[in-house]
Image (tube, rainbow, N blue to C red; front, side, top):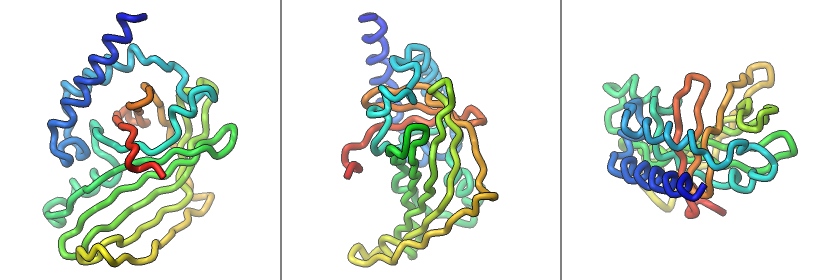
Length: 209
């Protein structure tokens, strides 16, 4: 057990170091790095919390998490990559996720991205929904019931902002997707989507309220 823990800490340190060497667009846009993916797979094998959605471990799960790497991009970055010739100059400033307690079988989830657009300034995109835990306590059905957009620094002016525009999603249009939490500790969280795209999050105390 002690040997496994030492191996896990070493792998985790190497994973973070390799990700930090990447520029943000390399780590968040579709651009899988096999050396990073291999470290993730090794960590998943020795995951210290095999049922991360169990009630005993939810305190580790709740909080603010910064997305630091994804093997095939996010919904936002894949869209930007597909139109990069049209939207050159768009900068991803930050992507993060907030997980909070909702009730005994659901977790409230809020996914946010901060973009800097040429001339127009900084815009924040937000998707709000929930995780519905499955019986194995490591997978969940994820669904979003509202989206929001806000200009937080119009034209680069830091002392200005516009009200947030909220867009609800009608219930019959809401879709569910499976999400697996494959690794969790007090600092790092790894998840996999329905297409096996992996996401590496790091707990970010600077985002906590």
